[in-house]
Length: 174
Image 1 (spheres, one colour):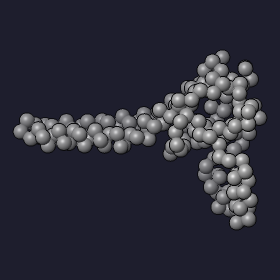
Image 2 (cartoon, rainbow, N blue to C red):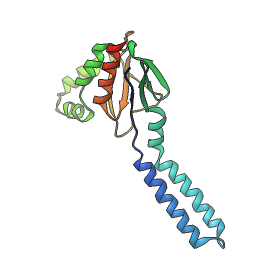
Image 3 (tube, rainbow, N blue to C red):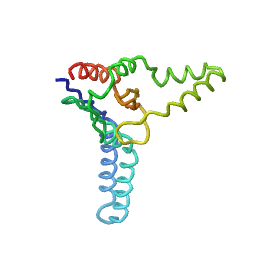
């Protein structure tokens, strides 16, 4: 039985919460009890900053957390049976270019090549992003796999090679 769980980085979230907490405590030592209204404004604005600074990590935790267990791939809020993924698409996903390689390729392409690629991409349509989010977050890699029904699925991950290896092993077991 293949088990894979992707750990999401927590350093940014912990760091911002420690800094904001230290700021609120330091302000509390200066302002309380005489200027409690100002301190409550600082407390509220610090809570707002905590949400703003940690929006992407919270989104990654909700929509892009990856688990592979008992023959099912769970990405965010969505679960897919591994047996429904085609082995060919898992193999081909290893050869897909990274975002930086794709950008370099697009920059080196001629206008005619770009027009042809655009025409072909309109015919197939974009793959569906798995997990429930609107876009792939910064700092994550992406790859496309297909289901037996022919649906193209876009999966965002922090460790593309390990996830594809685990998917390949799980697919062979099913």
